[in-house]
Length: 313
Image 1 (tube, rainbow, N blue to C red):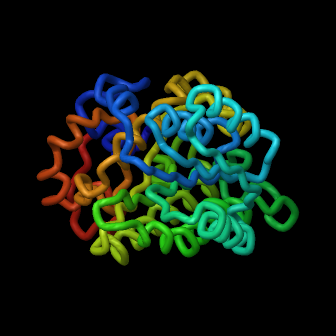
Image 2 (cartoon, rainbow, N blue to C red):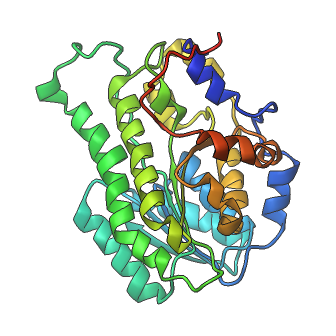
């Protein structure tokens, strides 16, 4: 697994690590969400995003706005939701997160067709490209993978925040207001078998955008966090991960969705997590117990080191 001790430290931040939803996360799904409860999920057509949508449906979300480029796959996810939660209203919208026009159209759909505020926005769209461990490999002019990684992971997150945060801020007092990005601990990686620079650096930029959203709107009750979904055997992971890493893709696809339901159910309770990089693998109860340590140390954020403090191996 990761060779950088700092990456290992965040991977194992809580004493207990989960690869599937534990007792607390399962309870979050069986306890109904507030009514009404509306969630917009960008990148909901497959894999982790589809799993997030199903978790919110099982938890009693009244309306789900699902967005992705592939509307055929979105329709399949909507059918699955209708089968398990017939009372949930599901809207599907074609959306390319790298296009500001497309995301603006998604926001317009939410504002006019739903005629409601959003309680939670989940940004799941992501792009990895081929794993290249040296910046000098490949043809930068021809393949455009660096540009695509930043267009989706960084600019796409900005587009989502720019157009959808106003709909979150329109929620009445006491309602949920959560802007969640499905980030990655890859944002912390510099060495090792999956130190794919374009992905790691663009995902780090994504986490920094989340920090800015938290700083700018946290005082208005918005919770903004990035959440690592675990190591899940998704299509993107199987297409991009080196063969020697694929054996680590063992986490339950439902883990992230259950974690997000737990996190966004009462965003006011978790304001102290604002602007931080979290992991769905962590034990939620142990994480809450670490509140004082996290807040006092301003942990789980990026910073430029200004001391020679040694990281333990």
